[in-house]
Amino acid sequence: MLRRIANSLRYMPKAPLQAGARTPVHGGDNDVLLDAQDASVPADEYAQMRLLFEAIKDAQGTIRAIDTKVGILLAALAIPLPYIVAAVQFAHAHGMRLGFAGVFGWLALAAYIVAAYVAIRSLTGIGNAGGHVLKEQSSPDVFYLGGLYQMHWLDAALNRNRSLSRRSVEQIAASIPREGAGAVRVLVNELMALAFIRDVKVFRQRVAFEFTAAAFVIGILALIP
Image (cartoon, rainbow, N blue to C red):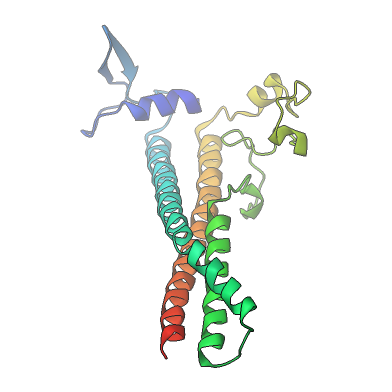
């Protein structure tokens, strides 16, 4: 049901269509006719699913945009790295003084390290976020399928044939909702999991930018004679 509705929503035009109407979709040399709305799905549930699909796409787009900005920030943080290493080596060679410039210099270095660490953490992938979603009743995880495969350290470098799914194709197929209300719950669960990932990345992005700005300002103060 989810796949059929997703395909229907994907090719649905902006103008509202009546239930059961068919829309021609031009793809390659053949015209494909897709149901604009499955007759078995009530209009209110169909509207909910359409809204949820758009919200999921928006959350995914926001996550990608955040990763792009943090990646640019991390590249910018790498630019002064040779100068920072040279400054630290100079401080060790000539003795570490705790004067005005020395204190602000070490504070700037600490802020720089925190900014780089948080930026890297922001780019680090977040796996199954379904555990952070509050549920009054369980819903099958058939959208993201988090934890379906158990990974080990060897999987980071090797492709192992022993890495098998924890559930079979038949088990996954049996857990797919057959009714619209169940499909809505699955989509809401996926949206809330994505919202957690988005909020974590937004927070880490803000912290990384703030510490970068602090490192810059404190470093300027350390240069003041």
